[in-house]
Length: 246
Ligand code: 4AZ
Image (cartoon, rainbow, N blue to C red; front, side, top):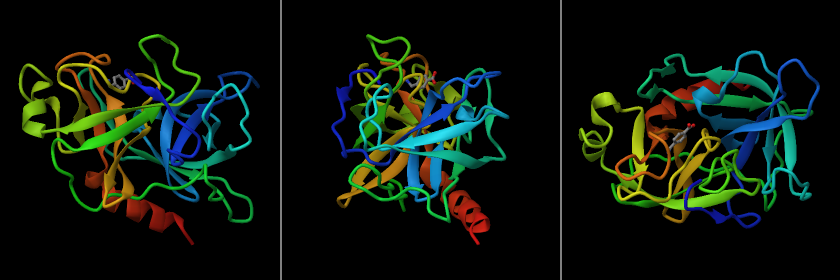
């Protein structure tokens, strides 16, 4: 996160760290992406966060990646559902969404606490200019390998036609994504924040409106962050969860 502030315990309880075990080793799991808890056994993340054939785990209720705070809940990823039309090109990432099913014990996955709580799904588009929150452990102005402490920043939803102007992203944007940030530069998501939440306050409920997806570098003028448009995938999310639930 560029232009971020430290998150205090319990303020973004749906934020998770998606971690993989380094290849050919029994080393500790490493943070690669963010994610969002949307139900006890389900996490949303970006499609480009899915590395094939790797052990993955999700850490919930975490603030500092290198310390145990006693608020964390860690569960293995049991199943990955990558969007069928996920596609990366040199200029954009399309349908950048995946669902992770957590492996619980006796059917119990995340336990709701002050520090671990699911975000709601949005039910309708939100207005351009609305202020929303992004968060993650990704790259900062100071830390090229990412932050140890969870950071957050405020961004504004940017009009799609505006963001498709030649001086910004041009014609590569489609309906599976939207821009948010500050056209003058400043607060932005960055590498390592991918898959994490852009949440907005809709009638005092926090809804996950976007997932950190891509952008041309971080914090630059006329290059805002691009987010997976969660409202485009509501039917996909609901049908995948329904099909996987007994
Ligand atoms: C990345 O490399 C990345 N400024 C993520 C988000 C943004 C840029 C790059 C948005 O994963």
